Image 1 (cartoon, rainbow, N blue to C red):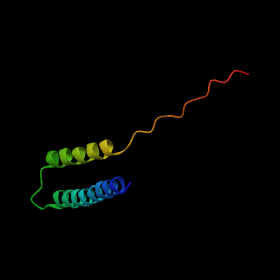
Image 2 (spheres, rainbow, N blue to C red; image 1 turned 180 degrees about the horizontal axis):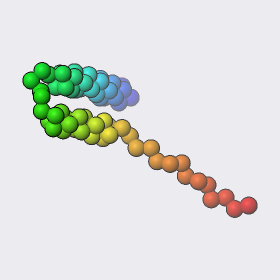
Image 3 (cartoon, rainbow, N blue to C red; image 1 turned 180 degrees about the vertical axis):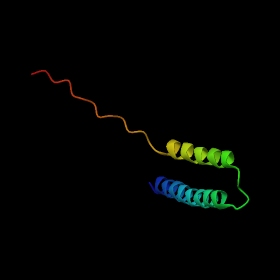
Length: 69
């Protein structure tokens, strides 16, 4: 029981830390004064959006019950 709790806590902590670091990295990349190439900026934004979509869980639609009246 304690091992499961510890592993969940560690996993969630790592996820939070990595998310914060990634956000800081993207802010730095997108505000960098040396970054003037619009195509490169678009690629970075697309990579970020792709990461967000991968991280977001998919929600399946609710199943309709097959009740016969």
